[in-house]
Image 1: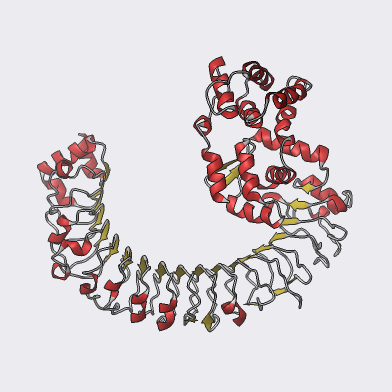
Image 2: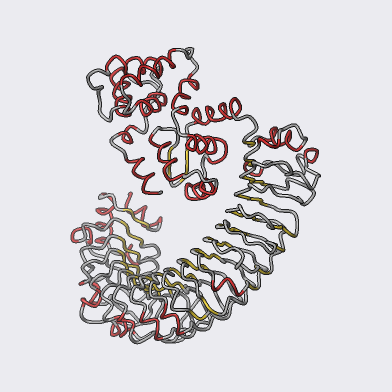
Length: 630
C-alpha cells in the first residue's frame, strides 16, 4: 500500500509544481494545468481549445487547475466535452461546485475514503488511518493513491493532508448528499444525544481534539444506557472525553473501530462484537476487559495506553487474528495471560512503561512476532524461554528493565534478530554465549549495564554487527573493564561506544583492519587514555569522534581525513589543535567548550578564526568567541 502511495506522489514532474503562488501569469497557468492533465508543459494537438475552456472555468486558481487537470488526464475528447458542459452550468464563483466534478468521477469506495478523510482524518498518521479505512473494507491502498493522483489529498511527513477548500467541499457533500452519515461537529453530536438525528443513517462519530468535556457540556451529557441502540450502520466510534454518564449496555453490531479516551467506567464488554477490528482505549478508568465466550475473529489492533486501573490482560486465544497489541504505560499491569506467548498472528507487542509487570508467558512461541518492546518494565525479573519457531522476531527492546539479571540461552533461536537493546539494565550480569549464534544481529546496546563484567568471547562470529554500545553516563562507572580483545575481528562495526570504560591505549588493536568500517567512535571520559590512540588516524571511514572530558590531552593528534564531527568538550589540558581545516576537508562541526588552555596560544586563535570564516559550525565558549570577533 505504501509503495502505491509513494508512486502516486512521485508521478511525473507534477510534484515539482507542488507549490504555486496565488496569482500566475498566463504561461504559468497553462503549464500548471498541462502538467497535471497531460504530464507535459503544453496541450497536445486537438486539446488546445478544450484546455483553454478548462482554464477559464478554473478561474486561474492553482488548486482548481491541479484538481481539474488530474480529473481530465487520459480522457478522450468526447469525455472532455461532456465534462466541460457540466462545468459550464456552474455559476462563476462557485469553485467548490467546480471541484466537485473530480469527486463525482471517483469510484464509490474512493468517495467514502475521501469523505472520511475530509471529516475525520486530515492531519492524522497515514499508517493508522490506513488500518481504520481497511477495517471498513475500503481498500485504502488503491483508494488513497487515487486521491493523491487527483490532488484531492496529499501526504506530508507521513500524515494525510488536504487543502482547506477541498475539505470544505467534502463537508458540503456530506451535508447535502450524505446527511447525518458522519458526525464530527459538537452541535451535530449534541443533536444526536438529544435524539434529533436519525440513528439508522449514522455511520461514524468522531469527537475532535478532546473538545467535548463534561464540565463544559454537562447539559448535553448522554444519560441513557442504550445511547447507541438502533444504530445498525455505525462503523466508527471515536469518543474523546466523557461522552456519557451511564455505561453503554449496547454497542452496534457493525462497529469496526472503537476509540474511547478517558473511558470513565471499570469494565468494557466486547461480547458478540465479532466485526470489531480495532480497539483503542487511553487514560481512563478501565480495569476489566471482557470479551465473552465467543471468538472475536476480526479483532486485529488493540491499543490500551495509560490505563491506571488495568492489572491484568485476559486470554487472547479467543482473538486469534490480533496483529498489534499495545499495553504501554499501564503501570499497574502485573501479568498477562499465558496464551499470549503462543499467539500465532501477533506481529507487534509493546508493553513499554508497565513498571509493575512481573511475569510474562513462560515461553515465546510467537511465529509471526517481529517487534517486542518491554522497555521500562522495571519489575520484570526474567525473559521467557524462546521457541525455535520465533524466527521473525527482529527487534527486542529491554531498556530500563532494571531487575533482569540474565537472558536465557535459548535466545539463540531468534535467528532473525537484528536489534537487541538492554540499556540501563543495571542488574544484568551475564550475556549467554549462545548470543554469538545470532548471525544477523546489527545492533547490540548495553549502555549503563554496570553489573556486566564480561561479553561472550566469540562475539567476532557476528559478522554483520554494526553497532555496539558499551558506554556509561557520568553518574555510572563500570566495576571492571570489558576485555577489548573481543572487538579485534569485528570489521563490520560502524558505531562503537566505549565512553568511560577506563581503557588504555594498549587495549586498542594495532591493525586498523579491525575497525575498517568504523564511522562513529565514542571515547569520552576514559581517564586512562593519556593521548589519542594511534590507530584512530588510520580509520579511513571515521566521521564522528567524541573525546569529551579527557583532562590528560594536551595536543589533539592526527585525525583521519574523513572526520566530519569532533567533540572535545572539557579537555582542560588541551592547548594545541593544529590547523585541522587543511587536511580535514569534510570537517564541519566542532565542540571545544571549557578548553581554557586553547586561549593561551595565539596560533590556535588563527586556526579557529580561519575555520569560522570557512562556515564551520563551532560550539565554543563565549570568551573564545570574543577573541575571534575582536
